[in-house]
Length: 278
Length: 322
Image (cartoon, rainbow over all chains, first blue to last red; front, top):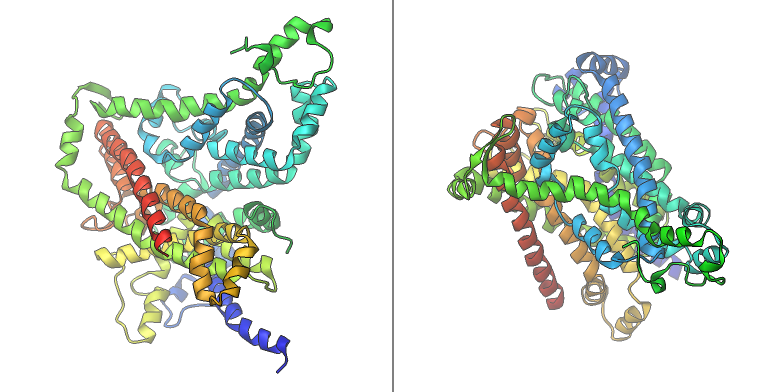
């Protein structure tokens, strides 16, 4: 056996382990899809269903019949798109200032950013609920949108991105040429930040789309349903149709999975800090 | 703040003195404050929807406060005293801590293992990474729905698999340990890949010389992993433990939807898997006792800080021992 063959044999268990891990990661989603294409009766079969059936359209119709899924998708899209755009804009402004501009109190303010990332947000829901009630936003979409317009995480992310990809010399040179701060931000910082901004936009979209606790508390499922709240209604025991439930779950997960697959290279490179060239 | 001394000005390399320009006085004053304007929207959101609610939370917790009818008077530490004598509170706290441990320990070990597998020249590197990150993008509600079926009593795949090796079907929701195990599996499934990628990133930054030195000393793969790789990525492990503490103490959706009565549930017939945020939700949104609910939040907030500190200490010690 030559060296290459020997090495190939030695890496075989590694690939085997990775296949196992990947199957474990993907299987529950695949199975959810299978059930969403099957008649409700397959769930009672003696061996679990593993291949898609032909009932996807029936199940979809049943989901849209049982709950107001259209309104839920529309509301979730409004919330998630607004939150994604505003996080990118507001966090890149703040992140640029934290990374490349000098102003009084900069360092202590940034400590506040890092500190507030460590505070569990769900603990503040009761006072937030009362506050939102005072503003008259109860069961209105802005109750979910406005508090999420920009997060500490986004600002942190954008500051790190600026440190990595916006050269300080370029900012100084532009300033020396008499460029206004806003123009420097627009013509120097933003173009350099495009890949990281795309990832942040996606992460913010997913977080808003997937959010459940706060919308459950503050929104009215009859007036302003969101996808996750509607899904939880499918699980509430009023329905015992499993294929209905998992059709909803598959449908609700589809947009974020698509978005993720489209941007997976950027997301993974962003997470691994660009050290990869695979 | 607008009148910072000239040395604080941003245009550090401005060639011409600002006074030479016609619009200088107004322009300079605007410019000193301008960077703050960049940060202002974020600060407003943070203060109004982040800091104020936390301060307000402490205030509410000292009152008999009905969520709809409002303030019914100051009660001092009354809510806290009641809470400390409330068995359901301790039950929820215990459930939260045990589920957190059952989910976190295997998750960190698994993620380390997967990261080690990925940290070598492999074919299809991006494919593996995409696959293991996929669970993390799916909403917790969808995860709870799918796993609720996988762990179904009569028709669930998990029980079917157990049946293949002769184990009788388990009613996963009904007991303390089985329900905890199922919920922990949901958390592990959703977060292991994410943590593995973060560890992988850190592993790539461990200096190659350390590995070469270890190889010269004749250290095997296993020993190199524990004495070079793991200590080398200690700050990253600490970071993930901290974030999973914050996440673990907030655990809500998975257990809430694992209860067959959905969001109206209390974590099983005898609250065997009711977590602290579920209890907070039950008190605040169910019985509308905002004061009591606020007291729960405030105590959990303090606990979060304590747990974070304990965790940091523990991980430091463990890694040093290894």
